[in-house]
Image (cartoon, rainbow, N blue to C red):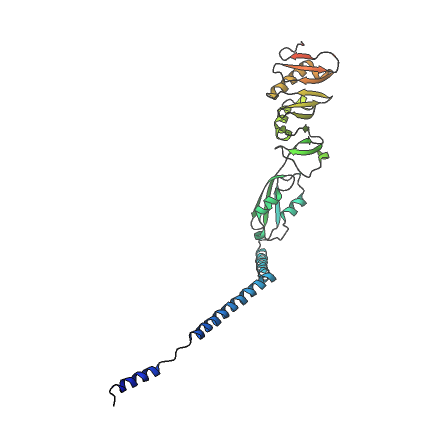
Length: 289
């Protein structure tokens, strides 16, 4: 008997008890199947969510939840009962309410004061606005309206301007014919300063019918009777006061005057309709020279 036969038999028996190894190819195939299944499930889920999004399901559910919340808030006493407005003069009440977008019973929590402020300030007469929610049931609005200052004529068009020199849009010009008329490309931004000068002499102010901006530097005033008053570039207020004083003392405007030149600091030059030479009046004693 071969002495090595028994160990060899044991070795073969031990080897026969080891499990057979799966082929590598089968393992890769199984893994691919599992990954493919997971990808298919993910694709189906994403596709379902996308379909719901396209169909609007999520949006409808969210809107329904928000509407339900606002409805409960109104039932709890947080619904608009009144709109309090301060400062309104020219802006129609119906236009304001329509712009605010609220009515009795509107949810207070759904009302956006900042958005309402922006909308109100887009109205023609509203210069600035402040909007508040005064819980539980009131909306408070305070507006500052534009004040019409003059009519501005430029390039054949006439518009109403306010005290800041800004145009007031969408208003009927014929309703403001009593306002002074200013002419010139840069007239609006200088009108408030000019009218302050004109108003400083009330008796002369009543005679002013128009003002023309000259070369972007100074003004010519048109008075009743077709008289042109040429104001200087600097110290227009002083020149205007000088004319008022001479008018009180000598009644210069009652004469057949066409032009009064106030551009010289110590005198005024008067031109009449006649063919005579212009007359010069000194501001000191009023004597003609």
